[in-house]
Image 1 (cartoon, rainbow, N blue to C red):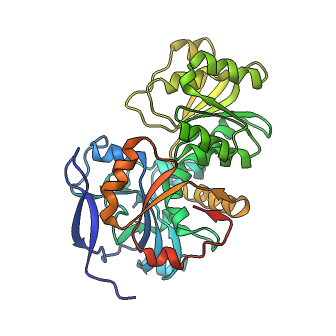
Image 2 (image 1 turned 120 degrees about the vertical axis):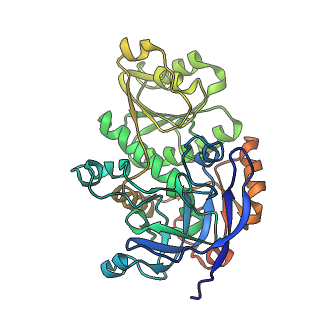
Image 3 (image 1 turned 90 degrees about the vertical axis):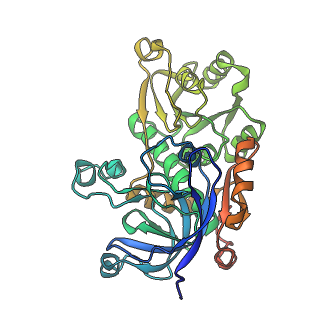
Length: 375
């Protein structure tokens, strides 16, 4: 496959300004652990809004957006070639971290599920210091990239690269920290969003009973479609939601709650619907996380943060999807030039699921879309 010298990329060139389509060099200078990916699909995440608003700061500018990408390997670094783990032609879900150090306690410690907390890495694709996937080609770290089975489409894989990995680990974190067992209640606040509707399905597949809470008609519908046993409208108010959760959950509340909504009142609601001594797993990224002190002091609610998957957790997620399937709500836009239309839809608040740019239609058309994975 001939690799061109230049390509188109949708880049953040100034904070609080629209993406700019630029012609940039194809990143052919691969380091040992690199993969060069011909991008098929790149999706949009709430974190991309935070990048354009400068919430992470300190990043190089311009920076190519999107940290959720999928595509086909077209070149490999020397270490990757020697290992044989990836080869040209492999379909992959791109990794987001780049050049983790490999020597810190997170990289070398006994808990593999903490690998993503390395603080001595080069950066995160599309978020901090490293170009992302709103481009024809992208360079990513093979150690954080996941090979796709034949029944997971490239269109489906892009949203999984961050949103899927994040909620997969969030559910597993809830199971671990709250010692959840089959039949226990997990409440998901923000259950009908791009992350939430995946979290509902992962939780149900784990044997949990799910209460979904959302504040949009589209989100309520998506929560039901995803399999939430009980769906509540956050607009009815905290007291009504707490009463409804207790009514179905032994009169005590959910055993654990997953918080994926970042509105100011969501954290207090997540704590309130959780039973005493229960766990709230925080995935959303509000500027501040505010809860009444009584939830922590008088009710012993335990707050736990969670980031996206470690490499093995990502492989586990894909294996689970291969076994159980996953229904994804994806709104595709064809071509990088549609980036402004995509952003406008996202900001409208009416989107159902995840918005994505089909960068290379040929790959998507060629992809086998007849498997258990749908987008």
